Image 1 (cartoon, rainbow, N blue to C red):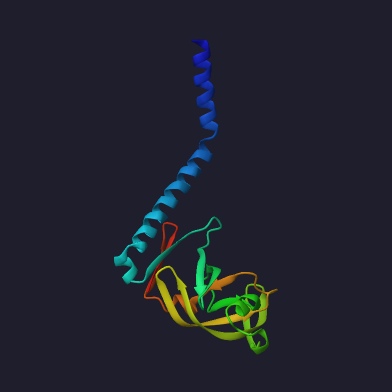
Image 2: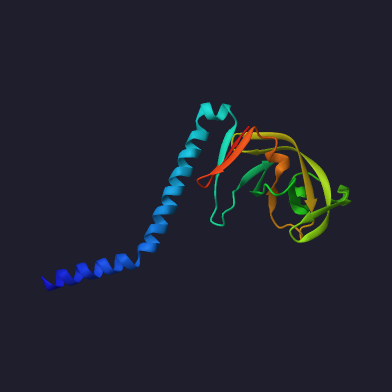
Length: 172
């Protein structure tokens, strides 16, 4: 009987010490479940015809996903603080823009200061069931920009977008 009581006390102590970890895991699972339910809605034919898709918030608090730009997959982060889509020279090359033809004559302000950029127009930018044509973008040097940002030149062409409960919903 003593062994059973000791075992029970130890299990209670262990579970109490692990409660923050368990609670965090439960919260993550619930958030993923909500996001999964939203993705199921976006995948249904009725929702597909409305041009809607969702992105779940990543661990860093950002909305990231694999977009298709000019038909090529590009991992990008949604940045409503960016006026235009921003890509680097390497990505621009992969999307069909010749680096030699890029004209870096535009001064743009970034979080790291002012920098030169080249203006391009992406034929199309897609994510899930959302497809937008003729999206303005800036090309920055590889040193100045290491990831792709999807700014307001894409987002403003949507009918609406909302961010709630760790889900960004984009409607065309």
